[in-house]
Length: 507
Image (cartoon, rainbow, N blue to C red; front, side, top):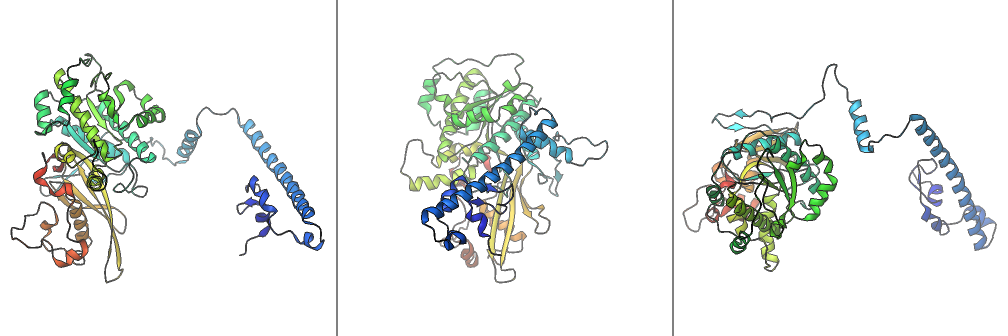
């Protein structure tokens, strides 16, 4: 159907220009003079100035009629608002949420759903390993992450990693996203606050460890990054944590002051809703370099919103300085890397090293070998979406899966069912699988092993496969090379002998 010239000529925007709901553009009056004049102006042979005056007068009259009609509607709306009663003090968002909740049908006697106290129970497989089900919500993800983290802390671990996408898969590709994006930062802050609350509320007493032994075992013999500055810092006097019924305290560390202040301003309500909000505190990564830094008073330090690989050495500096002061005070700190997307940041290290000239403080592979490898993974989710072109119907096959880990369970690989979209366990392992192995396991589950050129021996899919001792031999068949190329693993997955510790691979 052809467009109606009237509304467009008169400067209206939208399909319903004749009604009240149409939008009017004040700046479009100047365009009216450039449009062909109406037929009566052409037949009357009047001058250009007279035609413009006619157009302007008609437009002004129409505008007045429209404003009068809109004003009447506004007056009716204002009258209905006055009759409804005084304006509520709640925000529009809260009123909308309350209205939506009131429309949800509930059975008689049914109570509102509350956050479950514990994650779903695991299942025992044939080999006696604990298999966790696929999580149903972010509330369950945070709870399971807390459950796994506390298991590691009670076992004596002091360096722990938690990593999962902060937004649904339909809204975010966690593998290639910009971690400094505002919505990602806000989501991570909300998850970190919920995670910190669960740590504060947990009544279990942390095991008593020897400070020097705990720090030495956590570092696994790696040298300090700035030993001279740490020695100089220890010459100062630091206040000790006050004794008494203070309770367990958690400090959330941000990479900069901007994000820390944003969390204070935007998410203040979440802090205020706690019974004791002083137990959940905020800090930033460079506060340990300030002369006024009072010292590490908290028990658990949660590091979030790492926005670039260059922030990793700063996190390492914070951990080493805080541990040095706490060791002198006779205390043991627990450090948690929360949703830092380490897979992406570690993959960026090789890129920055190859493209950007060396700069002081730039992340190098030693950050992983000497520091990140000492963090034991407690909870992990990584999605993978792949496509393969085959010479049979349907010719283009898409398959989706996820790598999942929740301590004390093994590393699990889930495959998404094509019919109902459910995630089903297809493989388990006692060590973290490589990303390429993850893709190969999905290909085998979808019946694409032959098209992908994979060998029949599935044990050769991962980085832990036995090395080929014959010189000059190719580890992969020719069909597999055509699909994947000669490369297999990322730089931080294959250099097993360079790592100071293999904790980051363990289940």
